[in-house]
Length: 339
Ligand code: SF4
Image 1 (cartoon, rainbow, N blue to C red):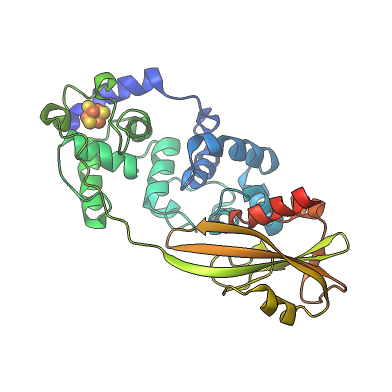
Image 2: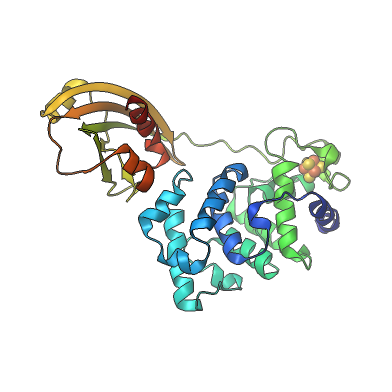
């Protein structure tokens, strides 16, 4: 692997993408972008990142922001615990480090929501510490360059790769970490044919030499996701719609349209909502989480009187103030079209 360092850095300096969070090495910028980039594509993150920085430009502001406003800014990125952890970590930095981001990996990794990858990325990019940042891209490039048929999701193997890469880190560890990840994102891409002809490592890559690059890394068969059926109530009274905060489980504390974890038919709904003026089937939506799948059937229910258990808000209020998770967004779009 040590032979990859020079060509990789050379390639990166000439080809690195212009990204809003790469304008400097400020740890706040690196941290926020790395958390947003977990589970979300670079192109999609750009607009969220710029909006976030405009409203919350530094750690102190983040430590003070109202949680509902923070979640509203995060709306669309999903995995909302990431946003909550950002605020918790900001409070800890303000309280324990006087508002200044800690430099060392061992301190950074103790902050809420920060794992090995993110701690490695921040300490290497912002503070030039010789720490690795191993993500799926790095694992794939490593497996192909060394032509090793490894399971890249295996934690033990990941640790071995991390220790091997740590030994070859150059004096610019941040550039190296970003370079190998970027190579994995744009050249040594997953699944489809990697772009070996234009790869700066093609003279040293063993998979390319052996023509095994499309077989490595080995494909992992994913487990079937558990299916759950939900009935979603789109309750309307005058020009307002009912929202509630989710009390537990997935999306805890997020705003949602009231729902129940089973599928009900229209007659069952008539029994439940006896003060309704009308009930009709609305839309179906399926939402896939990491480990489960929600199959959601919704009903539009016009009430004669509001129910006390809910917050009654206009559609404009939702747009302005309430963060609705992606799983429930199609119902909001349906209500807007109907309006
Ligand atoms: S030569 Fe091909 S397989 Fe090897 S690192 Fe480059 S893109 Fe990946």
